[in-house]
Image (cartoon, rainbow, N blue to C red; front, side, top):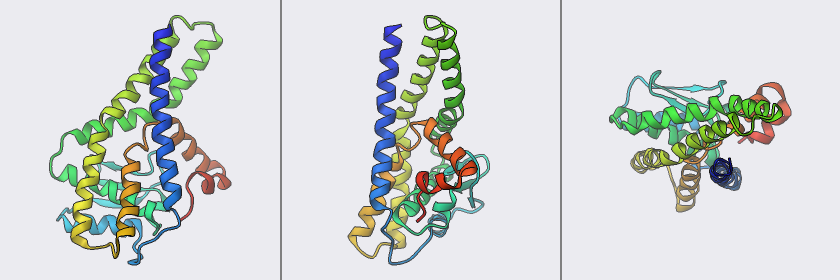
Amino acid sequence: MYIFVFIFMIALGITFWGRGRYVKIYGEETENRLLANLSGSELAEKILNSRGIEGVTVAKSRSLLEDFYSPEKKEISLAPCHFDGTNFPALAVAAQQAGKAIQDFEGHRPLMWRTSVIRWTVYLSIPLAIVALVTTLMGMTKTILPMVLLIWSAIAFWNVATIPTELDAGERAKKQLKKLKVFRNLDERVGVERVMGAASTAYLDGFFTVASWVGNILMPWARKRMNPDP
């Protein structure tokens, strides 16, 4: 039992690190904007066009996975604050997702692994938490609970293992940003790229993603806390 708890604590620590890193950098760059005054959706479209990619749509999302590229639908979904937003985080998230569309266009197979693990991370987080709670209350901490902890840990570690795919998407997007010359100075480039790098760890914790989505739907006041307006 202790080995399962130890593995789980390591995985939990990694997810807290990933989420904390993203939230910290996101908050530091929220007030900054490009002189070009582009929105996230506009920047994503520009990146796709500069790479010659057709048939990929950029949509305002209302689903659980708000900032996400779907290879099946050929669609970049952006949270409302990133779709219409003009600050560095909105542009960075949009560019990151556009980078995944470039990966898909160029046949980068690891994209599918990353897409699958993000879905597993988000959609299994709440069911696993419920099962863990029920098994603990029923006193089954030596049978089912260790398996729940192991499954959750495996998903977290696999998520970490696919982070290079996320970084690769960012690098592909940066190449197009350089061609587009959207940055007027070094501060703009560094600020946007900082958030892009932090976004690579944004989906390590599925619990926060689900909580954020529920809060945005059910509690208007939570929208400003979980997804700051640009």
